[in-house]
Length: 156
Image 1: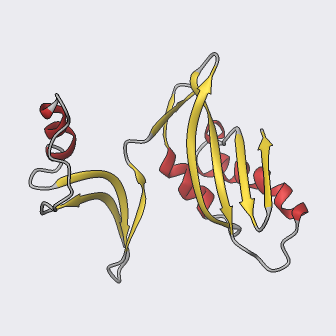
Image 2: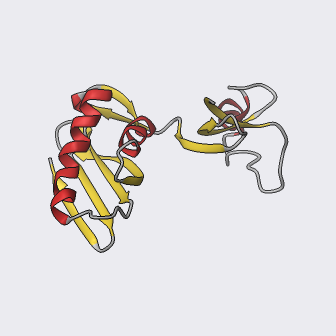
């Protein structure tokens, strides 16, 4: 049970070999961080049984009110909620702050007895969970929920 950077030790037929007109950047981005390995840019979790789970891009950072925040860390907290099967978090432009807001997309589990009313409280529960585990500024402005025909955007 360990988390880290996903790196590949051997070349494969479809891998990138350069960045057009910027080979130095290719070397610095993919081969320099972990000498002898190709750094994919992804985080990974390996279970004690040897299974791998991609946890998100390590370089996918959003700047919220001057705080650098990885989308993967917000997704990890959201995915801990019993009703959430999968999530994706992105930043989007803000008139004053630049990239100052966050949008979370959720795919919910089909839970026996789940109602639309319970789904209505989910956005508030998730914002509270993120506020406690990360920080208040990390709570997404909007949460797009999708499951079994339900689909609504919940403003903050």
